[in-house]
Length: 157
Image 1: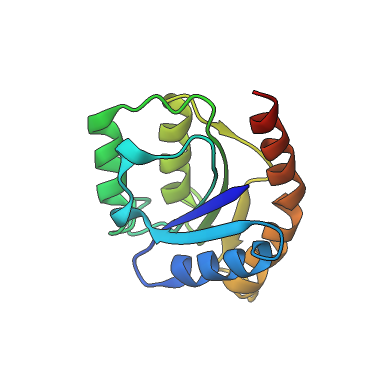
Image 2: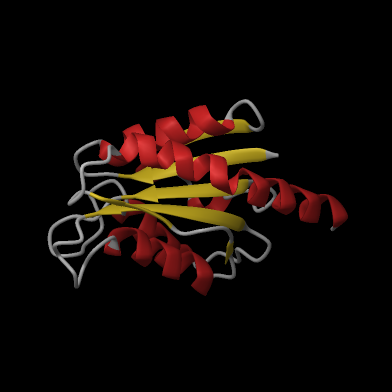
């Protein structure tokens, strides 16, 4: 199954995490990594599996490269029924009201248009000392069976 990893970032941490997720999954799946701002929402492949990696900026807003993706989804309102995806969010839990909110915004929008999130919602907390890339890689290894199940469901359709 093809796994499209899309990231939204402000400082580059989400991109680094996305690259490490691709590294963890590439032995089992064909992987592609793209900045969200470069994704054409009208060409989202609902037969592929998507991994969304998104940081949070400011007071719970989307990071700079996720905003165009968000705006394009809102404008196009695509039917994403059949799309399976997983989410890895980055944030700082000392900001309790907005922790990992950027990824939650994208997650809610994908579900609104019919996509289904699978697996554990991954989160990196900048308030702890664990590197986001290390945590992302561990998380990716944990969702690999979910991706395989999604692939089986696509084959059954």
